[in-house]
Length: 264
Image: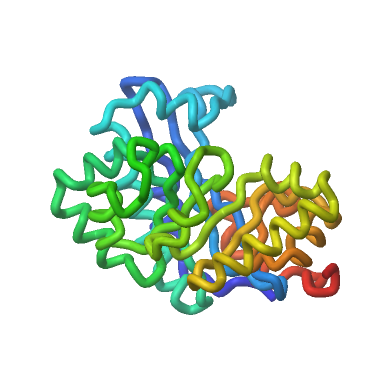
């Protein structure tokens, strides 16, 4: 089953973003999130940087380390424009779109009312992903005023849970809609076999009791996928499924060829 997508000419015109001062070009890239029935549930929008006029690429994390707050905020505004153009398609297919949000971007957004309005307007399809490092200066998410302000604009997902020092009780605070289990933690739990599976099951049950959905990152093969789903995880994401650029969205499947549930 293929996606239904409107004419994407306008989308393709804004699927790249130039950073002339750094001789860089960013291209929108979409990574799929699948539910436990094998249905496409969301797409994470990433930015793939490369040097202008070259095929040499560089990691987004490295690029963002050297960008100022205004530059990072400009990139986020461009990403929002991509979300806005895809909103009719998402509505038609029941999909969510997620964007990663740095603390610098959140700080910049709070200075720009038009961006706050744009985020709130995209609320039905937009979700913002933040890492544990976003709130590392606070013992509890509810104590972070910047995080609370962003939560008033959009539902939040916690990215890479297990990479930092955030505790389970903090995750159950009601601030996060989804929690994404860090790939390294997932792989360690899988290697621990029974004890790892029991831990992930208990964590999934605990979070679901607070209406928090659990997503496993770093799923790269059917064995890891089976481990995650049999441990109570609701959604999967990882290298097992190839992402796509904007030009490939119209051909992207809405359901996996083989039901994920069959691998439980």
